[in-house]
Structures are given as structure tokens and as C-alpha cells.
Length: 172
Image 1 (tube, rainbow, N blue to C red):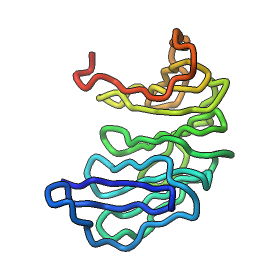
Image 2 (image 1 turned 90 degrees about the horizontal axis):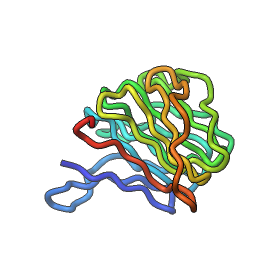
Image 3 (image 1 turned 90 degrees about the vertical axis):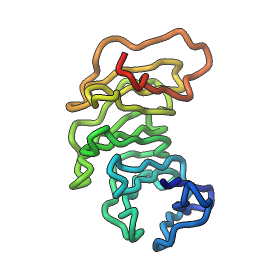
Image 4 (image 1 turned 180 degrees about the vertical axis):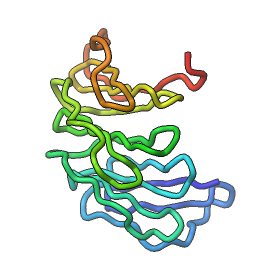
């Protein structure tokens, strides 16, 4: 029922998907450019990351800040909620992924290292058991969705960086 948008001006906005009108919430703003937005599966929280090297989590109804997730050392380019809403995965230009507890904002695993260049996209599998990441190093990597441990060898074949990745919704 809602659309969430993030902008180069550092704002996150909530829109009514039927009317196109803005939903009244407190202003959600960061000082740097927004590179990704994600909404929790229950619609209660919004996460956004970008130039500030962190992820801000807000209450979707009030717009009040809930957590700031810090640890990346460069732009946080992508992020996603797990299907059950318990975890957030983030990917950064620092070539790492991080797995966070969505409730507490604390790290769940060690830093996920494997890409040789920027991480451009992340996605959870439909059951939350796996995470896929796409990198400027032209690989897709698969990770355990609970522990953050690498799972198998990198998927390769692209020749100029991988910009996006997604799992099929049917779990195949």
C-alpha cells in the first residue's frame, strides 16, 4: 500500500501507492545521498543507507529513528531485510557485507569478506537461508543467511561488473 523512495538530497519519503500522495510522517533525513531503501516485511520499519557509511532505521509510521547501524568504511550501496524481518544484510563499496539483527541493530556475524571490488546488490532467498551478493568484481557470491559464512564458490561469467541480483520468488 506504500512506496518508499530515497534521494540524492538525503531524504526518505513514504507515498500512498493508490493515491500518489505523501504519507504524513516525521521527516526522515540523512546528511548524505541515499543509495538504497528497504522496508521490513511487516511494514513497520524503513532502512536506508548511502554516503554516510551507515544504515539508518526508522519507524515507518512516525518517522522516528530506531537504530543506526555502523561498521562499513565506505558507501553503503545496498541492503535488504530477511523475509522474516529478523535480519538486515548490507553491502558496501568497502567490498564487504554485514549481517545485522533488525531488532537490536547489532551485528549478527563477522564481516563478510569475498568480493574484490564494490558490492552493488544483495538479496535474501525467499526462505532467508541464503544471501546473494553482486559485485563490481563481476561475481555473484552466495552466503549463509543465518551465519554470514560463504557458501560455495563465486558465480562468474559476467565481464563488466554485476549490478543487481535477485532470487526467484518460487524458491527454485
